[in-house]
Image (cartoon, rainbow, N blue to C red):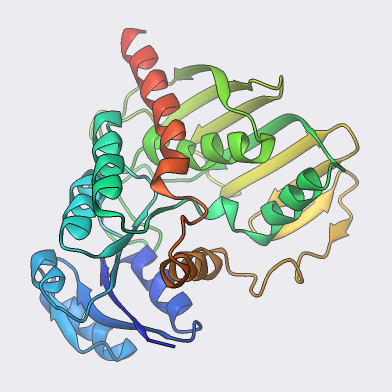
Amino acid sequence: MKTIKVALAGAGAFGIKHLDAIAKIDGVEVVSLISRDLEKTAAVAKQYGIPHVTTDLEASLALPEVDAVILCTPTQMHAQQAIACMKAGKHVQVEIPLCDAFADGEAVIAAQRESGKVAMCGHTRRFNPSHQWVHKKIEAGEFNIQQMDVQTYFFRRTNMNALGQARSWTDHLLWHHAAHTVDLFAYQCGSPIVKANAVQGPIHPELGIAMDMSIQLKAANGAICTLSLSFNNDGPLGTFFRYIGDTGTYIARYDDLVNGKEEKIDVSKVDVSMNGIELQDREFFAAIREGREPNASVAQVLPCYAVLHQLEQQLKAD
C-alpha cells in the first residue's frame, strides 16, 4: 500500500487535532507543515517528526511527493487555498467552513470538477459516532426526525481560539458554527432545506460580528430544526443536539449519546474510532485510495452554504 504523503496548513488548535488523528492512521505520513510563525511551526513539526516546514503554501504544493493537503487555515483563505491545491494536482480536505461567500464555494466546486481530485470539507458531525448511530437508525427505517433542537454555545468575547490563544482572524457564528448544524440537519433528514429564517443580536463593537443568533430551518420532508448560537454563553460550552423523532428522542453531546430519559447509549462500536476528526480523515484518505467521492465532499456540502448565503442576505436586509 503506497503511503499517502500529506501537507498540513495551519498548526493551530485544529491543525494539532488532525496531526494527532493522522498519527493513528496507517499508510499516511505528514511530510510538510505550513503556518504563519516559522519558529512555532518548526517546534510543532519537530514534535510530530515532520521534515519540511514553511510559511508558504506554494512551497509545499511544489513538493512532488505531496499527494494531498489538509487546510486548517483561517476561514477567509479556505476557498482560494483549496483551489490552489487542486490546480497543483493535490487532493484537498478543507476544514469547515468551505467558504464565507457562496460564490467562492461555487468556484471550489468548479475547480474540483476540472481537476478530478478528491475535495472534501470537514463537516465533522457527519462522522461523530453519536450522529452516525442516529444516521444508521434512520437508514434502517427505524427512526424519522420530526424536529432537531440544537444549541451551539461558546464564551468568546475576545478573539481567542480553542487553546486560549489570540486569533489572527475573526470566527463567525453563521458561516462557521451554523454550518455544522445546517449541513447535519439536511444530511440526517435525507431531505433538502426548503425554508430558512434567522435573527441576530447586537453587533460586537470591536469584533464586528453578531454574538448571538437564532435560526429556524424546514426540510422538504416536513422536519424542522431550531438552532441557537452564542459567543456570550458562560458555560456549559459546546454543541448539544436533541433529535425528536417518531419512535424516540436522542440527545448527542459530542461523542456521548443518551435517550430522552438520559439513559446512555453505547456508540463505541459504531466505527473504528470514537474520534470524529480521525474518522473524517480516514474517509478522506480512503476516498483517495479508492478513487471515489468522499462523504462530505465539497459537492455534497455546497447546499449548506447556499442556505447560509440566503440567511446572510436576510440578516443584512433586516
